[in-house]
Length: 298
Image 1 (cartoon, rainbow, N blue to C red):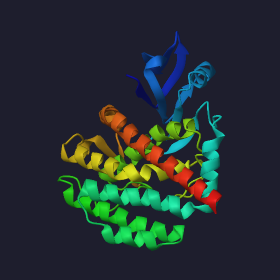
Image 2 (tube, helix red, strand yellow):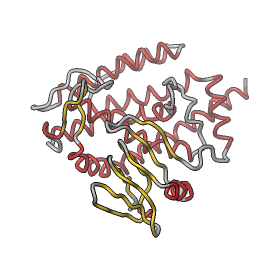
Image 3 (cartoon, rainbow, N blue to C red):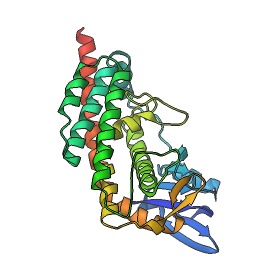
Image 4 (tube, rainbow, N blue to C red):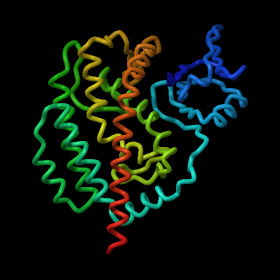
């Protein structure tokens, strides 16, 4: 089975005999490239040009993150594959039916919050259907997200504490792990979005900022309740302890020593998350096609 391979700084990376080689603190490890589905580099590192070329040739995406998990850039071979029809559906829907597509994504998110956290959000679903502007939809999204995190707070067991979602920077251990897990799943989603032919910067809910592939964030919204619950289970099942985290400046972050624990957790959930994301992507395409057909009829 292929795995996401993560390197935490400081490290030097190169390729030899079809293997990714990593040199770190005078220790060297290597893994066959055929066993890697994506590469995540965190912090400071050096990488050989031969390895970059090999990653591009083998279509292995590489994600460059800060030491604390903020995405800085992406290396990916097929940025815009040849299936232009998908992008035409996307552009048509954005220009003519943006609110309709945004409603689909948010409706699905609300339904998943209800299912995962056992909440009744019918009033918000009814209100969603009455809205005509994306800005109004974002207001509803804010309310249902607050309800989700309030349910999260009530279900979270001691010794961890969580008051509200804060991520710039994360103020506690729970926010730190939520942010890291969301980012890794964003990295998981981006190659799927690109290989499916979508423009990652044309989105229906989120607004593009800098290098942010905002469509990925849009498409993650329906599965975000599940991702959030995964973190709740991880804390309640004592997969992580307070000693796994450290204060750095004004934020709290996962220690380097605890990354193996996090990566094992991420790998166990990866196939499940990819399956959920693929289902959302398939339904998303159906909505885009329906939108395009309705415009044609008009």
